[in-house]
Structures are given as structure tokens and as C-alpha cells.
Length: 491
Image (tube, rainbow, N blue to C red; front, top):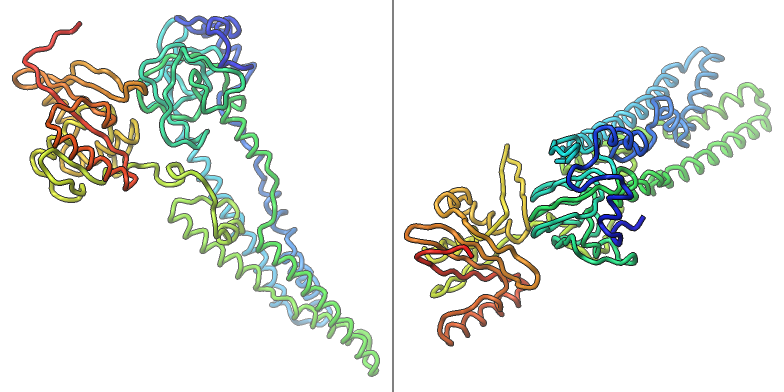
């Protein structure tokens, strides 16, 4: 169903829900029984026997098992050669254990990531706001979201205020998208242009919203991607293909050599049993028994190096495929890198522009404080892990503030905010008013050409020159202005 183009009241009717009271507990339980929990279906896991069979069916392993069988036959008939059988079987077992061990480690790591992704969400049921596990959501639930919340399911916005959502996981666009409950969206609009919809797995970076859940689990847009991943076919890596080809050639060489030796021996009058033993021994000797385990150990070492870089590899041969990658073609940057913005240079009136690594004077510190006060982003550091909530541009300001030994919390205690005009795409500005000693302080930040300039023509020309100089370096320019008032009156 095209939820983005329907009237909101029609959606309430279709889902048998109420905008104010939400679903009843009984209705939610019934719907969950019908549609299932709000989570992605996992691909079918391999049993231990299936994993063992998977490794035993590799060509190199089959050759080793054949060599072990022939060696065992020779050992039984001649009375010696048992150590060779034990060594070959030991190599097969070691190769199998290493592979299964790595796969189990990767699966445990993936399960841990899924558990970390579990979160609570604020929902209205029976007219009461309550926090529930996101997996319990069903179509028709009324949810409330704020900055920093992960969207738990696809939902149609009922009402919103200055709502911005980062949808890079779904669309690839790293900049937050402004959402509007009243936006008119057609059926043909792509995902990135459905401004009245929220999508599972995306992050609210600013504002707040009240929305009605319309799709959950595998029926969400993110769930559709997950279903494609579960449906992928397993293919051989380049190394596996080359090893299989090598094994075939060695098998042919060993077989031909054995037949030739057997035939030449019989031609010269040797007994059939003696020549059969010699031919089989030659064929076994031609097989490099240690090759599979050497390859496995080498790849396992590569897997461990990847683990140190926080990369999970489920199957050992896959690390060789990654190693074969030489060029990645993409038109995206923010979502392929750390998706972090950093302030590079700062300019305050009366001071020469300087890199942020240098020591700031009083006017530059004041400028940084103004930018930080008129800011809704927060950065929390717990156990050495940095958690960013808010727009990437605003977050870069708070990050620089922390690097200069200041905190937003201290600034807000000193100059509490009493009023705000949120940023919007038409005005291209954000204004906040703060209570300070002796009155009030109004701070406006945003696009350079939208902030009124109250200084001389010469100073304005200098500001434009510096703006252009920053822009030529591909820097995003943010301007800030302020004014002090003895008193303020709310209108």
C-alpha cells in the first residue's frame, strides 16, 4: 500500500487505530500474531553436520581423503605407512576445525551486533505512553520520536516540529532530510523524497515527531533489502576456483603418472601387485597434503588482521576476495568515510583567519561559544566511545568546543536558552535567545548571505572576501551574529 499518498485519517481507518489513544493491548497482541514480531528474518543457519559436509566436499579435501584411503590400503597390505595416514587425516581435521571455528566466531559476532541494535521505543497504547521493546511494534501503533532516536519501523508522520532524519543507511545521502507531516507526496516519489514518511533503521537528528506505524519487520523498506541479502547465492572465491583447478590438474598428472609407471613396470616383467603399489605410492606422493592447511592458516591470519580493524568475516576464503579488491567506484563520500564533519578554520572580526589547531584569542573563543549556544547537537563520551546526537554540521561545532576544553553543558548553565526559532530551509537561519547577566542575548547562525550585517562597507567587503576564500577550499561556511537586549517580551 502507498502510505505516503493516503490521507492520514484514511490510514487510521485502514489500521483500526486512534491518533490519540493508539491501539488497545488486545488489538496489538492480535496484530502481532498475524504479522509477527518487528524484526528481520534470519537466513537459515547451517547445522554442525552441514558445516562438516561443506568442508568435506571441497576438492582439495576430497583428494586428501582419497590419498588417505589409498595410504591406508597400502599400510594394511604391506604392514607399514600408518603414520602417513594419520598425518593426512590430521590435516583434514585441522583444516575443518579452523574453518568451522572461524565461522562460529563470525556468527557469534553478528548475533552480538543484532543484540546491540535492539532498542526501546515510546508508544501510545490504551491512551497511555509507555516504553516497549521495538520488536513488539505492530502496524497501527502510535509512536513518539525525538532527536537521537532510532526509527523502529516504517511510519507515516502525524505531526512534527523541525524534524530532521538521517537516512544514509537507506538512501546513501549523508545529510539529514527535513520531514513534514503535511508534505504532499505522489506514488512515484523515490524514497528520498517521501518527506511525510519515516523509515526503519534511520536516525532522528533533530526535532520531534508523532507517527503511526504502517509497516514492520520484513515489510519495511529496510526489510526488503534484508530479504535480498538472505536470498543471495553462495559463490566461490577466486582462490577457491584456482585451488579447485590446481587440484584437478594434480589429479590428472598423478593418474597419468601412475598409469605410465604401472604400464612400464609390467612391460619390463614386474609383478602386477608390486607395480600397483608403486603406481599408487607415486600418485599419493604427487598430492600436496599440506597445501589446504597452509592456505587455511594463511587466510586465518588475514582474518585476524581484519578483526583488529573491526571487520567481521564469516567464511575464511572471503578474506582473499577482499584482498583482490583494488578499485571501488562510488559517487558517495560521507557514508563511506566516518560521516564526521570537522571545523577547519575560524574568522572573527578584527582577527586574521586561522586554522582551529592554533590557540584562540578572546574574540574567537566568544565566536565559538556563540555557535555552540545556538546549537542542538550533543556529544557524549562514555568509556572512550563518542556518541553524537544531532546534525553533523552542528556536531562539528560541539566537537571543537570540547577540544578547546569547554563543554556545552557549562555554557548552557551560564547562559540558559529561553526561546528558539528552529532552522528551516527557507530562512536558512536558526535563532536562539539566552538569558545572560544584564539582560538577554540573541544569537543567529546560518547562511552568510542571510545574516544582517551592521558594519561598514569596507568590513563587509572583507567578510565577503574571506567567505569566498573559504568556499574556494570546499569548506562549508557558517556565519553567526548576535545582539544584546536589556529586556525581552514574548509576543
